[in-house]
Length: 366
Image 1 (tube, one colour):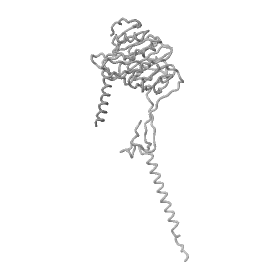
Image 2 (cartoon, rainbow, N blue to C red):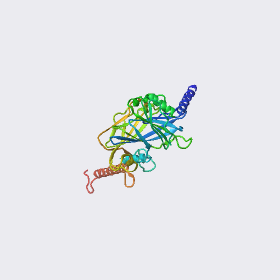
Image 3 (tube, rainbow, N blue to C red):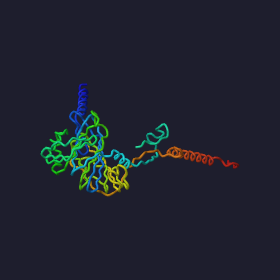
Image 4 (cartoon, rainbow, N blue to C red):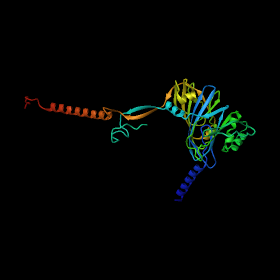
């Protein structure tokens, strides 16, 4: 009994620890709540357009927790322009990439089919303050308020100085972030630092946040991921890429193998998709990737053009093969076979009786 009590206490302590400990999560940066609050990213979705010179990333987060404020850091290879994204973009992309629905028929009944159900049925289917003065090693390119976002665009030649500036300006940091910034500082990247704060007083960050649009010059299609190694929980990334050709990551960078869920040419983009990629033809690639152990992430995603092979995921609905208004084919087949067998048996018996009877009018010899 004492052992059971100890196990229960340990489980309760673990759950309590998860409630009070901050959850650092983000697909391409570091999502950082205030102390004693927590925030988790259920899913990050990004739409990326690249024309060979300029890359535009539109990001949307679905979050949970009790945090009223949080910070997020995204490294970028060049000076960035930041604005609010179109909330309709991801719904439009979901419609373009939704799986094809097909029926797949089976002969023998399964669970949910008659006689395993009560009736014949189908099978189960599957405002910003002025920039504070920057210290040595940090430059403030700009700072603005965009909806629920307080955005600072920064340069840095020293990761420690960058960490000090962020901390002094209200960006709470995990201890490991300064070291994780070192590769970007060495490559002379810049940074988009974002503070998320609901416009309503004392409201918590929950659900889908307003998309944020970040554009910068880049000679290659790169999606920053290295800071995600600071995440405490498994991460899921959904990525829509609009470019001249089908694009795929060069490597899994420490996660599961990226899965292509859609690839195809969009001849005439409309609405929010045209607002990102223009109205001319473009190639859309949709990727899904899981990172069960974020600390294994060892690089950013560098994407390359591959053969423009179209692909659309197919979702099958299993259905029982029927005819004539819902009669199972197996029942007619089995029943018909049984009738034929019975008839054949009756005919054979009848013929046998005829052979055994004497011929009428003929007397058998004594």
